[in-house]
Structures are given as structure tokens and as C-alpha cells.
Image (cartoon, rainbow, N blue to C red; front, top):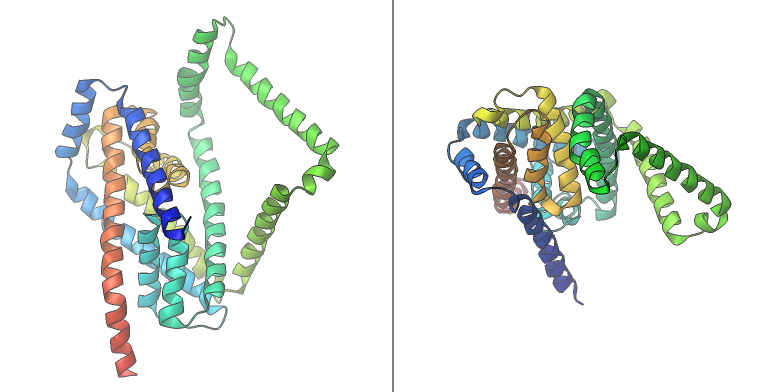
Length: 339
């Protein structure tokens, strides 16, 4: 199978998964709820969405500046404009295929800044590792802040339906916790007994290599010229992501009362949707809808809000990617002429 055919198959598969999640969510809705989704999107105040878009562009610019700091540790001095265009093109490419974005943005630097591909790609891995750390911190912070809401949701949506189907008269939540603990203990014992075979397994070695690479990548952050500025960029990127989601809440009356804590929940759980399905298509709006149920927002309105957030982000990236592809050769050609 050629690489082009593989890419087509992968794109089709991810698109199919997205359509499947859309079908899964919509199939249980009543005609009234489906009409509510259309009505919510039709009557939304799009000025709030337009206000959120510049925050997304700013987050991409800060990501470019943070990435530039990593590139500079290797002695290169890339231009801000090329760094920004490379980041936008990377996001644009990721709409089609996973990991294509990382390759694309490194290719831009190789072509226009003479930064070797393997070196720039290493910095991208480091950057991703840092984002993963920040995401995990936000994930557990969100769990701590939403503990009561989440426990009630899990009890209503998971424990009680299982109890009803199995005709159990006792509280299942405690039993499930015991089963989880028992599973962890059994898993630990299996690892101890078969540790020699497990540690020599190719999958284990691959995972270990990834973990060690992650650690090395985090260590390399100490080489940046201004660590505090680097940290500021990193935190600001995620703060802007949070504000983007929060501002869109005001576009629909049913979610305009929500606080920043709901924005954090949407950011964290929505990010998981992007990790599970390429581009988050189909699954992201469904996750937003289920997340906002915790805050008393009707499922249909939450679904509409999820589509508004997803669409605004992806349309911005698509337009930005096209503009970047057009401007890159033009601006760099002018700079070369002046030089």
C-alpha cells in the first residue's frame, strides 16, 4: 500500500469514527431536542464567538514564541513570522491526519530557516511532553474541583443503570471500587511474577523508550535562555484556551450563567476528545454536552455549544493555514531580495 493510499484510508477511518459519534449522540434525541440544537445555533450571539477567535490566534502566536525559545537553544535564530506560520500550518495539517502537523511545521523551518528537520522535530516532542504535563495537572485539578458533581453524575449514569440491569439491591459503587483495587493488586502480582518476560517484551521496551524520551525532553527545558518567560508562555497558552471556551458560553442563554469552573471542565474533557478522535470531530460536541449536564445545561444546548466551539476553532485554523501557506513564500522571497 502506497503512503498516499494509507493517508486516504486513515483520513476516511477518522472521519467515519467522527460520523459514528454524531450518530450515537443524535439517535437518542427526540425531534424536539434536535430542533432545540438547530434553534440554539441559529439564535446564538456570534459576537462572543468572534471575540474568542483572537484569543485562539494569540495562543498560537505564544506557542510559536515558546517553540522559538527551544529552537534557539541549538544556536538558530528563526524569524517570528516563520515560526507563527509554521505553527498554524501544523494545526491545519493536523485537521487531516494525526502527527502530520508536527512533520509539516518542522518542514517549514527546514525550508525557510535552514533548521535541520531532526533537530526541530526533537523540540516539538519536548513541547508536546510539556503540554502533556500541564494537561495532567489541569485534569487532576478539575477532578478535585468537580468531585461532588462527578460522583453524582457517575452514580446516576453508571452505577444505577448497572444495578437496575443486574437487579442488585445493594450499593454498587463500593463494590466497583473494591473490584478496581483488586484488579490493581492482581496486576501488580502478575508483573512481579512475570517481570523478566514483561521487561524483555518489545512493547514494554517501546513504552520505556517513550518515557525516557519524555524525561530527557523535560530536562532540555533547563537550557532555554529565559525559563520564567518560557513558563509564562506555557501557562498563558492554556489560560487562553480556557478563556476561549468560557467566552463562547455567553453566546447561548442556556450556558451564559456558567462560571470559569465549567470552562475548565470543558477544556479538560474536550481535550480528551481531540486525543481520542483526530480533530475531535463528532466526539468533541458530545463530550461538551455531557460535561455541561453537570452544570444543569440541557443536553441539546450543550451539544450546540460544543459545535460552536469546535467549528470556530477549526474554521480559524483552516483559514489561518491557507493564509499562511500563501504568505510564507511571498514574505520570505521579499526578505531574500532585501538581503
